[in-house]
Length: 251
Image (cartoon, rainbow, N blue to C red; front, side, top):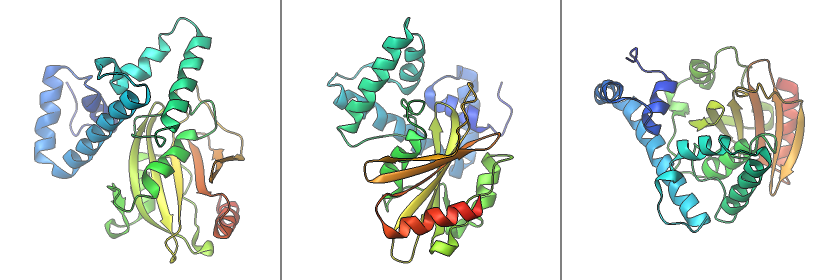
């Protein structure tokens, strides 16, 4: 049985359909009594549906139960050959790129190939969307406190005030490595950058500090002993250079 209140692991298992009947009923009763948590879970469920739709269109396949996010994530691990599994991951990533990039919070196929690829795709999917459903907003209090609820012993969020950027919204994201979060900053002119945090996963894949360009975006990334981080900015925006300078002064 699940200990209440259910943690993020239990809620993600509920979304992925990995709880037994008694556990699902227990979580369902809890969600019925806690509408804010239920709304977050519904958002995760909708994103999982978007993932199935994106993969179905990208691969030109009819609806298939094997397009369930959990089946995709874990089916690749069961490939007999690491070479073939890697090739499959690349094929899916390229196909998804042709239909607009990352389509759901559960998608994280290529993150081990390019540093913090999921952070870049999260920016494209959510940061530039003014109608993005948020798990945190400036009206809900301190952004650092919100992050601390989910990421114990994490580094402090970057202070980008010197570049004119303040945190305005945040979203929890489910990745292959575990729960992640994206914090969106905005300046008075409406330009946006994002700070992304996630665990390094079971392989403890920590990153040396670096940067890379991905199309119109740049990802500056680094790690602590517990988490991986990325700051994603428009690569050619002069304001972004000030943001990266402020980042260097705050971490």
